[in-house]
Image (cartoon, rainbow, N blue to C red):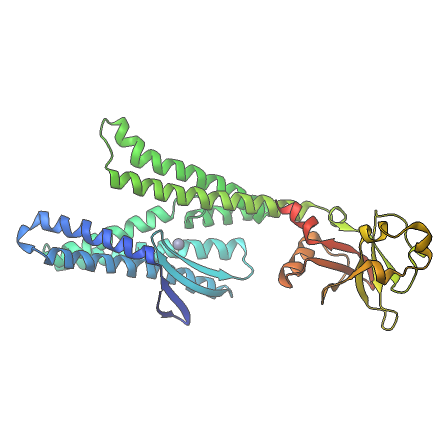
Length: 358
Ligand SMILES: [Zn+2]
């Protein structure tokens, strides 16, 4: 549900956020009602104000991420508030420095807001308005502290990742480390909210139990994703191109099989005789189905399939696996004919590439 935009970036709230808003309205409302039973339904109206205040706090947090990401030249796609707080989607080249600052900016904005709200609350005094402001200040303090826990997918995890990246020079290793740290945070979340009360002889409430499990599960999933992505990228950056690229032999489309076939350890690419453009890929199983005596007359074009458009890519010098992946991902190519220095280097199939990522 789009609710507006901030600096030209669309802002959405997810349906799950309404669940959180209802919970905050109810829990804050009943607290105020306990303090002052004469409030009646007004207590829940005030509860709704607190829920709205939380939404604004989350948007301030995400707005800070968006502003700092943009300051580093990144493209901010959208801002979303949902059950898990919120997130900001941006893309572009990051550095340890930009990642650290962007990650830190959200919690810092909440810390700043908490300070302002506390100051205003102390001026306003002990009344209902003061209590609401104080509660919002506390919520902002919680948002800041929780998000600063040093594990992905939390902001503190971004900061930790930036630091490890700076130290090791590898964003992939950093992603794995901050991901593992995120798993520890996920386990500690359950330990603090469920284990600690149990150890002290108390039974944690059902609501706390559900919320702790939800948050912990969310953290564990995000952390595991960071570990998986980090490992896959580590493999991509350390694998030599030969491991996923097959040798390719160019053959004229009209040349009979017998004149070029030398076994299926290499891939044969047919070339259009008119313009010299590689236009087809020979299928080894199609060649196998042609009886030996006929191979002297059946042309390459008869045993090949048409290559997809834009499948030939000329790199400046021999590319890395990372560069080949980048080109294939951008053009959604299943197959790429790698050309460098005017020479065909080989052919990369999406299926071979995928094995590296899994
Ligand atoms: Zn954040």
